[in-house]
Length: 207
Length: 89
Image (tube, rainbow over the protein chains, first blue to last red):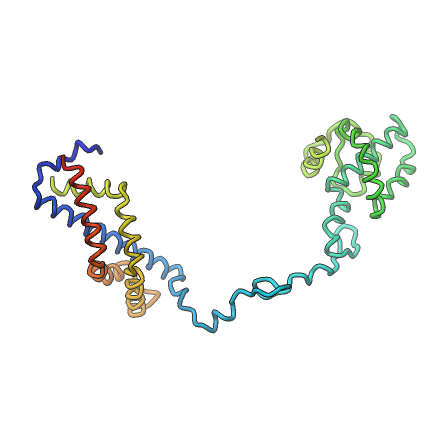
């Protein structure tokens, strides 16, 4: 639609004024209709009378602004010291330690894959291509199950260089880091299924 | 031809924001709230479950037209005339 299509010059002043009035009433009617539609929708969707709530109900749900309590008035610290049962090892763990414990327990966190990779690297060094002495490795690996091993892991961060050369990943089975399977598949990537979840931890290691 | 002009202008009006201007002014001056209150009466009369758009339109639109404050009407007409004058040549 171009301006050339409209030749207003043909219209005299009275007609222009009438046109203006028509446009104006069009606009007003549009505003009215708009309101009607809005109201109708609010009625049908059930939120029309929302601001008519009585004072008492309003007070019941007033925002709470006290220390130690959230805006609904509930105490938010109470779950800090509760205990949870780990679904994997069935131990009772404190809530604030639960997430890191699960990481280790399921063998899914960045640290667990690092620890496992390190173990494999050291076990590879110890017995080059032989698959014997798995039980010896198992004794070394027992450290993983206590939090004390975290200190050892932190000290040996220089071993990170090792990890770069390893394309190893940790299968989801928590028992597997100790098994011979992980040594067998030393430099090969396993199939897609086990890869998926630990893929992110692998990427972190490769950085 | 005349109505053709009106129609064409309707589209231009949107582009020049006259609609938005009017709505803003009407909200500002309380026209909206007034009419909303009137809507409530209509709804209570017809029943929340049964009220239709037509019910509202029929009851509200005439009142809405009347309730527009003079100042708003004047300003809008001014703008429309100016707009038309601009494009009359």
